[in-house]
Amino acid sequence: MAVATHSRLIIAPRTTVTQFKIANTDPKRTLVTQEFPFLLACVRRFFDPGAPQPTAAGLDWRKLIQLAERHAVVALFCQAIHARDDVPLDILDYLQGRALTAARFDLTLSAELGRLLKLFEAEEIQVVSLKGPALRNILYGDAALRSSTDLDLLVRPEDVLRAKRALEGAGYYMQSILPSDADGACLRRRDCQITLSRKITDQDDLLFVDVHWQLLPGYFPRFLDEHELWGRLRQVSVADTVVPTLLPEHLLLFLCAHGTKHLWERLGWLCDIARLVQVEPGIDWTRVFTEARQTDTTRMVVSGLLLASELLGIVLPSAAVEYTGRDRTARELVETVSQRLHDQRLTPASAMESASFSRRAFERTSQQVRYLIGIFLEPTEAEYEALKLPLSLHWLYYLFRPLRLTAKYARVRRSKGAK
Image 1: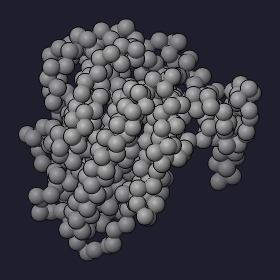
Image 2: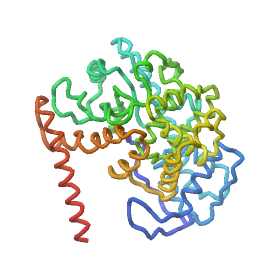
Image 3: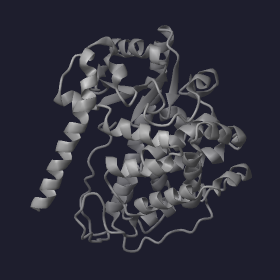
């Protein structure tokens, strides 16, 4: 979720900035240039200080900033280049400003997290903090090296409506589009989450809270026993508040599944994996892979670990290494992700790309079928906006979605044919 701190990139041209023309005008990808390798090499040095220092000759610095923001690694990138003497001053000033703004907003999120935990405690609603300030605390301590744009909170399914009402009573407004105004309508959302927001400044800047009742959408493979999760949480301190969050083993499984779901489009997600492995040497790898085998999600874990190791230079524990060389498909997934990252794509993957990738990432045919049904049949906000139905006729959305998608892609094909 974006807030005002993520404004559109505007940098006044200066003669000190090296110009590098990009001839490709396709917004989805650019020519393969040296910007992403430079960004990757800089970020890698945080995890592997012995990695070579990349050369900055011939870089398009504006494109480089776009990539750093797209991959959510602005703070890590800024730390890596702040002492170099070959970085244009306006670029460095901009990056430092962005990192500082993100750090300040993280303080706002931390304070709000503490306020909401007290609110939910008063309502006797158990909650788990996912990502956000709690994850930043685990991975980087107090250092503002991981920025967040919202709060992600997990509640039990039976507590969703009470959590929604508690947030609305605290000044939040619903941002998600629901199929109807009925009380149970929010539980019909296929992504198993609702988003609420409240104004936090006079300039109408918003703070967003995502309330989840499953770690990932129902059409995605279950990668751990969520009933067990509630009985085995860890506590971390954020802004003098005790925050419940996931155990390291569960966190690793969650981060690998989340990255797979989004085709590992952000380098920042791999940074989370790499840093977790580094700061949690006591991870019970036997438990991790036992859980993964039981849910047939080993391939997702292996590909996430391989990507973090090969791109960011972390050394995997021997207990994890023995699992990473057994699956050729996992190796193919790593190559696919690495190629997409180096292609420097600036827009999210299409539904077809995600479906193709997920088909290879899932180990059971039933997982693949369930995913395809979820992607192409289960209704989304687009259907709720286009057609208003009472909750009793919700099943009609499952017929309407494929019709809407067929019409949409037919228009796209005609548009391409006309060109």
